[in-house]
Amino acid sequence: MAFNRWTGRFVLVLLTFTACSVDARSADFFVAPDGNDAWSGKIASPNESRTDGPMASLQAAVGAVRRTETGSDRNITVLDGDYFLSEPVALNAQDRGLQIRGQGPKKPVLYGGRPIAGWVRDGRLYWVSLEGVKERKWDFRALVVNGRLALRARFPEQETLIHESRFDVPWMSTTGGGWQRKPTPEELTTLQFRSGDLPSDLEPANAEITVYHMWDESLVGVKNIDYANHRITFSSPSGHPPGAFGVYKYVVWNTKEGMTRPGQWYLDRTAGRVYYWPLPDEDIKTVRMIAPTMETMIRLDGAEDVEIRGLHLAATNTPLKAGGFGAGAFDGAVSVRRSRGCRLIDLEVSRAAGQGICVRDGGAQIVKCHVHDIGACGIKAPSCRIENNYVHHIGRIYPSAIGIWGGGKGCVISHNEIHDTPYSAINCGGEDHRIEHNKIYRAMLELHDGGAIYVFAGKNTVLRGNLAFDIPDTGGYGSSAYYLDERSADCLVEGNLSYGIQRPSHNHMAHGNTIRNNVFIADGDMQLTFHKSDGFLFQENVLLADGKIAFSFAPEAVDFRNNVIHSREGQILHDRLRDYNSERTVALALSGDNEIKDPLLESWKSGQMIYSPKSPVSGKGIKPVDVSGAGRDWE
Figure (cartoon, rainbow, N blue to C red):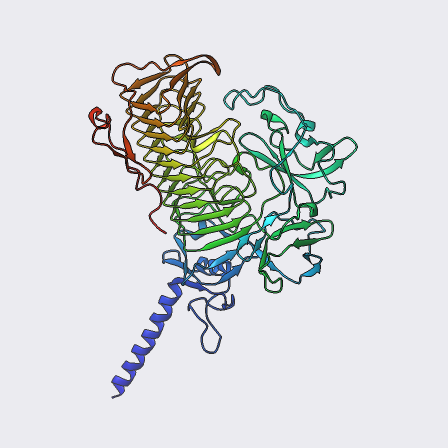
C-alpha cells in the first residue's frame, strides 16, 4: 500500500510537471475583445474567477509568442470582435514561423483609428471637437461612418473646375527622360484659377486640391489664396505642374462650401472639429464613426515565413502630399518590407485611405483577399504571387490608383476579379511575369492612358486567358484592354477576350511582341494601335466590330497571319504612321491566310466562344478561346 501510494504521488507530480513543461513550450495564444493583456492568453475565454483568459491586444500576444521557445509552433488566434489599435502591429525576424488567424462567425475587425462621439448640432450639420487637430498633431482624409467610407465635402458638387495654368513643355516619354524642361518650383506650387470660380471665404487651412494630370493626380494642401490675382499657392509641390499634358481640371475638398448633401463630412482644422451631415435614416446618437490615426496597421519588416489569415483591417490614413503615380508614395494597411516566404490569406481590407496591401520588396503570397473601398491601390506587390483575390472600388481618394500593381521579377497575377477602378485594373512592369485568367470590368473610369492590363517595360511577360469588358474611353490618351507600353519586348498576349472596349490592343514603343489567338469584339468602332513599335506578330486573332476597324502602325511593323477580321460597317483601315503622325489612311491590305469575313460568332459573354458551324474560324485551325473560368472561384 505504501509503495502504491508513493507511486501514485510520483505519477501525479510527473504528469503535472510534464503538463506545465508542454504549456511552457507551447506558443498558442488567444486574443479576444473581453481579454486582458495581463492574462496568459493561453485560453480562449476568461475563466470563472476572471483571473486568466485571452489577451486583449494582438501586440501583447506577439510579445508573448516571442518569449516562447523558437522551435515550437507559433500561433495566435484572434477571436471575432472589434479591436482598435493604438499603434501598428510590428512583426520582424523574431517572429519567424508565426501564424495569426482570425476565428469566429465573422472576421475579427482591426481598426487603425478610434471612435469619435459627443456630437453638437449646428443647423443641419453636427460637429465634435477632436484633440490634436487644431494643433496639427492629427489630420486625416478618410472617415468611416456606419461601416462605409463617407463622402468628403467636395467643391464643385459634381464634375470639376477648370483652371488657367499652362505648362506647354513637351513630354519626352518616360524612357526619354520625362519633361523636355524641368518644371520650376513655382510651376509645381501654384494654380491660376478663373475669376468667380471659388467662394470668397474659402478657408485655406482646410482646403485640399486634386490637380488632375493625364495618368495620375496630385492631392495637395493650400497655403494661400490670392483672390486679387486669382492664384492658389500649394503647401507642398504637385507631381506635375497644373496644365501639364493639356489637362486643366481640379477639385477642392474639405471645405464647408463643399457640404452640399447628406452623408458628407469635413475636418475643420482651424476650429479643431470634424463636421458631419447625417443621412436621412441615421440617428446621430447611434451613428458609429471611426477616424483613422495611422497609415499602416500590420507591418512586416524583415519577417520570414509569417502567415496572416482571416482578419479584416479597416480605417487608415495618409499624409497630405502628392502621392505620385498610383499614389505609390503611400504605404498599405498591411505593409511588407524586406520579408521572405510570408503569406496573406483570406484577408479583408477596406476603407483605407492609402494602399490596401503594399509589398515594397521581398515577395509574398497574397491569396483570396477581399480589398475594397480603398483610397489608393488595392494590392501593390512586385515579385509576388497574387491569386484569387477580389479587388474593387479603389482609388476613392487618389484616382491614379491601380487595382493590382505588380512588377519586379516573376510576378504571378492570376484568377483575380477587379472592377470599378478609376485607372488601370492591373499594372505590371519588369520581367518574367504571368498575368493569367483575370476578370476585369469597369476600369479606366476617370483617368487616361491605361488599360485593363497595362505593361510598362515588360520583358518576357505573358497575358493569357484574361477577360476584359465594359471599359469606357474617357478621352485624353485613351483606354485599352491590353496595353504594352515603352520598352515592352518578347511579350505574349494570347487567348484573351475583350468586348465593350473600343481599343482592345494598344502598343507604344514596344518591340518584338506576339498577339495571338485572341478575340476582340466592339459594339462600335475598334482601334488597334502600334505607335513607334516594330516586330509584332499578329496571328490567329478574331476581330468583330459593328463599326469600322482601324489599325495604326508604321509600314512593316506588324506581321499579320491567319486572322479573321470583320467590320459590319465594311471598313477595315490602315492608318499609316510615321512616328506619331498619320501619313495617310487606306484600306488594310491583307494577303495570305488572313480573311476579311464574318466569324459568325453566336455567343461570347459567358467567356466561351461559340461559333456557327459555318464559321470560317473552324476551318483555319484557330483554337477556340474559353475564358469562362477567369476570375476568383469564391463568393
